[in-house]
Length: 435
Image (cartoon, rainbow, N blue to C red; front, side):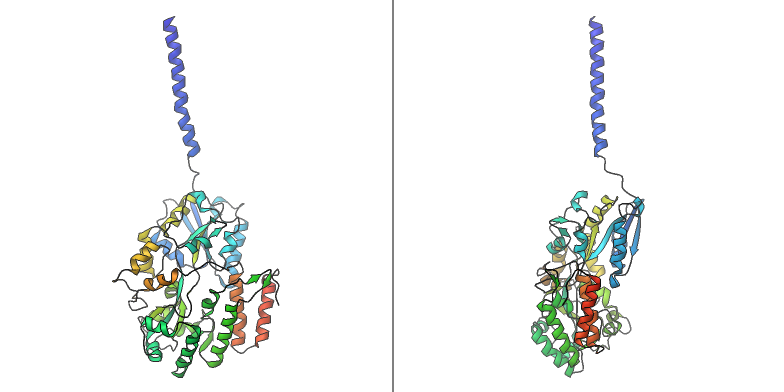
């Protein structure tokens, strides 16, 4: 009998051991992360970030990255992106968008939608070294949907040789003292004209400086609204065109870009760090350029221009890679330092910024002849505020400039130009009430 009881107890103990051993296995199975996709699709409007991605990000083994690039002109990029996002839920796994890029002028449209997801849902946490406005821009009611790899304080970029001739100095602090208000800027424009120079090379050159200092949005109570800063830009531009202080080319125009060659006659341009690479190719042309004949300073008003955000698309099956990309381009100090040294970028990492700003041996030799642009931009970055932005900004900003360019060129009168803008608004956003 004792032997029988012992055998029964042994059997019970074995069953208990088997059951206990089985529980962790079931638990581990439940905690196992979802299988990650093998195709990572990225929507973008140009190849700038694509270049950084291919240089500085190591794609996980077995994953194919597809870039779907459409131009941003006339809203084409958003149209193509919107079509894909509307089909996201029914798309095959390998066709789903995993990440897409957005600019400051329309990021809210996507952040405030269900097409983007909370970065915390896949384990990403914003680092304290990121600039606060970049997080705010990518957030909807405190829920962050993406990150930016750059911060975009914008400065007055001036031609040193022309400044020396017009102002008697090319020293940034001294130039700033002579151009630290719009009244002074206009007075110097007259002096530049008298010496055969243009103050700016595009009628729209100063638009971003004014518009980024607006205290009210484009649309108020459903009605189109012109902020005082927008009206001030129109008034100044009228004066500049009439007096021959500026050219009437577009801000991306070839005539404007040609003014960056050594034989150019324009003293002032405005732009952030990305402007050097993206817009000033003529300045560094080996035969006709004038690299080194440039410096930056704040100018009449502190402002920022643009920026690129990486947004997490709802439905992505590559969330581990999303997290890794976001961390690489915001928290990986080695990568952020390479963006400064190799790409002339201003990174979204205050620790890296501080390192270069305080480094007496660092200077931008590509364009600025060794000036520490990181130090200069860092003085402006703290003033960036994310206020008064709407989902209409890109097309309304562009639409106003397009309509008024015809007036500034003398093709139509001012009333006709404004009416053309109102017509454009009515066609693009029928819900907005225009004058």
